[in-house]
Amino acid sequence: MVSSSRVFRAVVLALRVALGAVLVYAAWTKLRQPWELFAMSIDAYRVLPYWAVLVVARTLPWAEMLIGLALMAGRWLRVSSTAASLLLLVFLALMMRAYAEGMHIDCGCFGFGDAISARTLARDGGLLAGYLFLTWTSFRGRRKAA
Amino acid sequence: MKLFALALAALLPCLAASSDADSGKSLGSPSAPIQIEVFSDFECPACKGLHEQILPLVMRDYVIPGKVFLVSREFPLPMHPYSREAASYATAAARLGKYQQVADTLFLNQVAWSASGKVWDTVANVLTPVEAKKVQLLAKDPSVLSAVQHDLDAGRAASINQTPTMIVTRGANRFPVAGAVNYNLLRSLLDGLLK
Image 1 (spheres, each protein chain N blue to C red):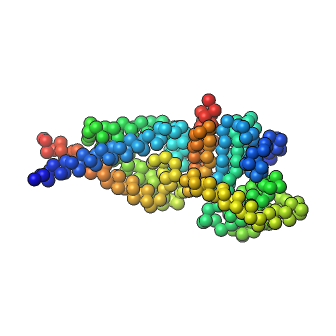
Image 2 (cartoon, one colour):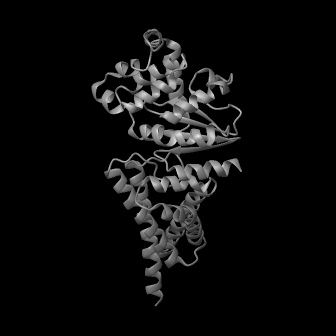
Image 3 (tube, rainbow over the protein chains, first blue to last red):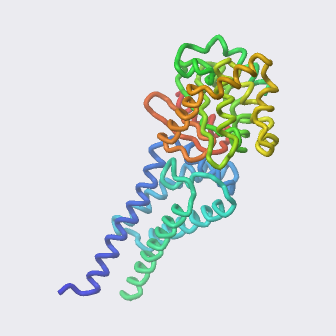
């Protein structure tokens, strides 16, 4: 008989790989295009000054790639899952603000054609819940070990 | 607008015999290395911003020097009650070589006609009586109506869901640029593609 803790570990592993892959895919959709396209998506939110738009556009996809790969590989789990949760928290807050203000813009999450809508908010909300769960399990595992 | 008009006059001889050039809705040389298709809605405020602030700069820096071929496409959104009518008049005017003048006046007076619904009065202001008569007839012509629908279908096929959207094409690569754009970023993108 399979113990419940083994099932739990298997679920966490599957979730970790899947959510890591989501970040890697998000990074790939940005890195395969000229960086200016992602910069325009960021600029459309109208929250950052121009210099910050340039910095974020050039660095964020690489950060997403690194965090996603770390999650998939199971390395630096507490740091990578916390970073992923914070990223999603910021993305979701910005998207909710844009949606509430009636801005008709692309969310910039997975390339072109992903306009902010109730569907994209629900999707990113679900992703955030997943990353928060992974964060909780990574710290929970440490406490148990201690 | 003055720049746009000057550019148009300078570019008229450049209009070659491609299908887009024939429609009277393109500017520049069809053999330019980059093509930009602009999908817009005459009732959309962001499209007005693009038309009046960004496109004149694109004309000056890229279209006139022969680096970009600019094509206008209609993408009337269902939420705007008069935009399809405006698109039909503009497309009809394009058959007489008057697309830019009609587009200019529609965007310039967007707030007024989108509130009053007096699209034709706005369009007629930039046409001679003879041209006005022709445009009114052409706007109901099935070929003009289907041209507007063709643009709309092309936009939907390209996953466009907002206006304005520019499709920047360089060789086999197509890059969609949606919404109000920062010209510095657009210039950086175009310069990068031209390298």
